[in-house]
Length: 126
Image: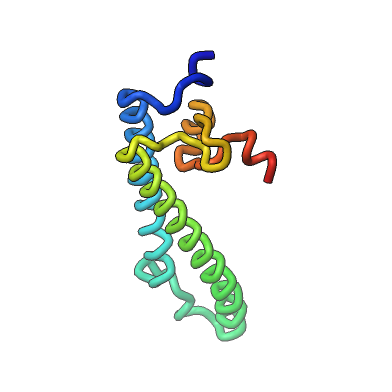
């Protein structure tokens, strides 16, 4: 397999990965905006007009769901940062190199997880 002897991906391959990452970034940023919107109640479907007992139950589940939403938003922000860091590695032409083994991460893995910094070999060692 020619990929095993390569020390880096070609500029054309890097361009292909950059397009994948940019597409995922756009999607991730949209998702983050939706999560932030639901946290700020800009799309609020409040329970202002319902009975007091029902409102108490709603408020309890709303707190839990707001915590979950906040966790999802934090995870999404981390994902976006990882994708942005992958774009920097593309610019530096170091994209696709395993930070443990120094070998190229397989193309199939990078297409599925474009922000990966570990080869499967290194990931399985963890």
